[in-house]
Length: 357
Image (tube, rainbow, N blue to C red):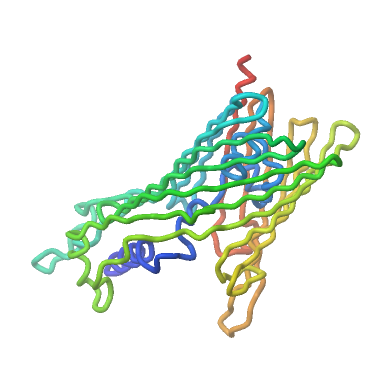
C-alpha cells in the first residue's frame, strides 16, 4: 500500500520539479488532435487545411470556405487518462481566418494517499480517502492570412496553458506558435511550423501546507520546494506533400515530416544541439467519401539492457467517412506494440457549417 504514496510523490516530483528549461515541459501539447492526422502519423504540416489547422499549422486556416467545428476524444494508458479537444474556426474574408481550440488532458479520481496512515498508525480505508484530479488545459487563439505571393500563407497561435494537480500545485503558462504553408504551381505543398517560438513560460504556485505534509514521507526526497518556473523549448516541424488523382474517383496523398527538438533525445537523429525524427503518412480516398490512412513515425533508438540500441517505430492506421459536410474519423495507433505506449483508439468529428446553408 505504500506504493500508492510512492507513486503519488514521484508523479508530483516529475511534474513540477526540474530545471527551468525542461526537455519535456507541456508534453500534453505534443500528443496531437484529429484522428485523420493521427492516422497519418501526424505528417500533415504541409497540407492541413481545416479547423484542426489551428493545432497543426495555423497557416492552413486560410483554406476554410465556411465555419467549421471539430471534436475529439481519446483515452490513454488503459483508459486511465482522457484527452478531449474542441475547436472552432471561421473565415473572416477571402484572405484571412481565425480559430479557437481547447484541450484537456487529465487523470481523474486519484486517491490522495498522503494521509493513508492516521495518527494512531492505522491504515485508512480507501473508501474514506479523498480523491483529486490532475489536468492540463490549453486554449489556443489562431489567426491566418494569405500573403501577396501566390500560394504563400502564414498563421500564428497565442496559447494559454493551465495545469492543475489537485490542491497541491497549479500553473499558468503563455506561448506563441507560427506557421507557413506554400503550394507550388505543380501542386507540391510545403509547410513549416515553429512551436513555442518565444519559449512557453509556466509559473507554478505550490501549496506549501500540502507540501509540508508530504515532505517527510520519504527520507531524502521532496525536502525542498521544487522550482516554480519552467520553460518549454521551441520545436520545429518541416513538411512536404503531394496529391494525385486517378480515374477521377481515386486520390492518393503522400506526406513527409521532419520533427526537430532542440534537445538530445532518443530520436533516430540526435545530437547535443538538436534531435530529428521523420514521419511518413499516406491517405487513399474514394470520391471524397471514404478514406483509408496509414503512417509511420516516432522512430526511436531505444537502449537495451545489454547497452545495445534497438530501432523502434510507431505505425498508425485510420479510416474516415465524409458526407455533406460531416466527417467522422478513426485512428488506431501503436499497431504491433512497436513502441512503449499502449494501444489507443481515437475518434474525431468535423462539421462544416455549409451543411446548414
